[in-house]
Image (cartoon, rainbow over all chains, first blue to last red; front, side, top):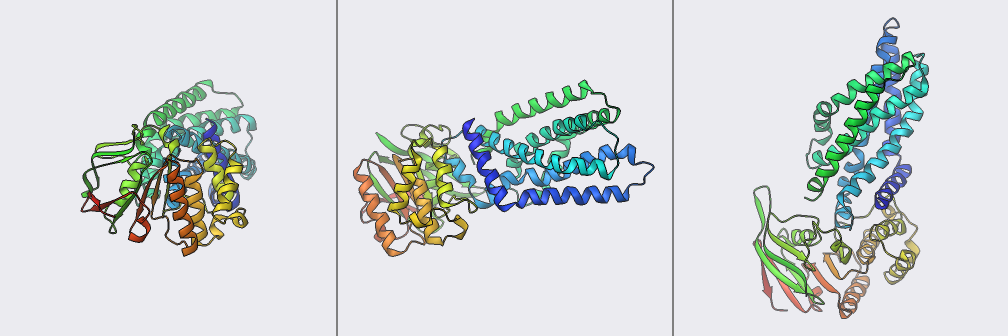
Length: 215
Length: 213
């Protein structure tokens, strides 16, 4: 577990120096949020804003979270992790921790701006918890599946095709959880579903990652 | 004890068979040179021996354990190649610190400073790897391979980009550490670099043959 933190720490250090992924994720989220806020008619904004918020995080997540492994593959440093005396699970956990920290940073920056842009009347804490729960599931699924597409030449194109069917249960539950933040009442069933799915995906990822990691 | 054993190893990439039924062994404490033409399979042997690749057929053992399965045995392997395995955004020191922590190296600060001193990197340790010349990057990569004081050192064309002085220093150092019972598999296509080896192997047509020095 300590080695997973070392990997996450190393990735964060690289990210804060290059700012390649973080800047892109923030800018992309801002641009899409502004576009949605301008394009959506004001009479339906209340009905669709929550779904659009999730869409922003899904788009930015697919493009951003895959970078954790793609960067290692592009630099060929992934072989440095392969030769090190660490279990592939520790590598996966390290990438998940790194992506979770990126995710929280993006949420902290984007959520208040999105709420202000759409003039949403929501329970902000509940909104934050719902988005975080859904995003956590996305991070785990995307981090695990990035290893699958690593060898493909069209990996950036392949990722969304693989991801959407896998994360569909999370999308629908997260929308339910997000809608509860509008009425200000927590929907325990939605959180339970997201939580169960997250645990299930993490377990599957940890059991199968060894086979994906060594060529 | 055998430090490295290849038993009927076959490896293919798609339809291209790179290694065909390869068998050889290296005893503990041996210094073995492995030569071969470009694309003959030398790097594949190095990658399989260091646990980066799984053989399609056959068995590979490092100190009696398969390196792609046994993470513990990787603690005893040092690996460096023309592919540097370094993070360009990190400094030379930070790269070694990261790997030192992954390898659970005790007192890694002292070890890193020793390696930097020996490889003439002390003045470059706080520079980001992306700002270093190819030769200095290669030296950092060699230092990375030595950070865990490995019992089996696999070096795949590591002298590429080194100036003649440092190249001689590295080759002399290998002879020195070999005297301390460290096993070395030295892969190159320069025959003059294997002059200090105990014996030589050649990869040709996906097979490994013994060669006279």
